[in-house]
Image 1 (cartoon, rainbow, N blue to C red):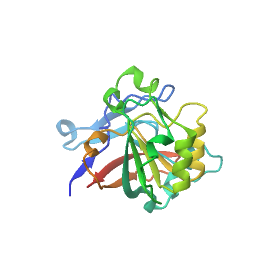
Image 2: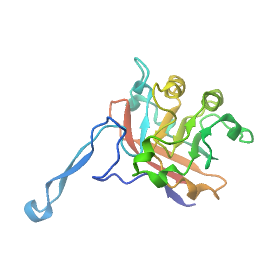
Image 3: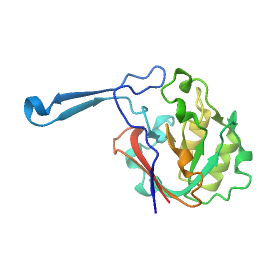
Image 4: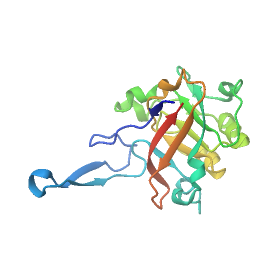
Length: 204
């Protein structure tokens, strides 16, 4: 078995969704001064690799911290959507989805994670694709893009209303192309909030 890290490293130069606050890691103490290091992070919850929960776009939705931990682990299914302008249901034609799967979509956009075009020019998920995931009862949809859609976030609402969680800003998905079977562990920090940073690992 091999482990694959699908998480962007969080650092001081993290790109953020337009309008979100800049992120910063500050060292309050360091080895030279205090003999130990203590750092502080300032960030919005939607920076870097993170998971969106129902409260993000659903009035009265469940905070991510209250989702059962079983929702964050499942059989992985990789969808190769490289060169696609949209992520549509035809990509699922020969994919036998199972209940509680975690569906990962490889677009290749993680290669331009720090470029200005990352947040403005990425393939988006169609309603047909999202509805197929809801019908199958999958646990999560993960993408190597800023998300499944843009304003007014209809696809976010469609998925999160059905408690299909969304992993955004993944990376290294191409490392799974030759792995026929793998499991995904996408564990968010347990903040009582609408989203949280996550360390996302595949094992296969």
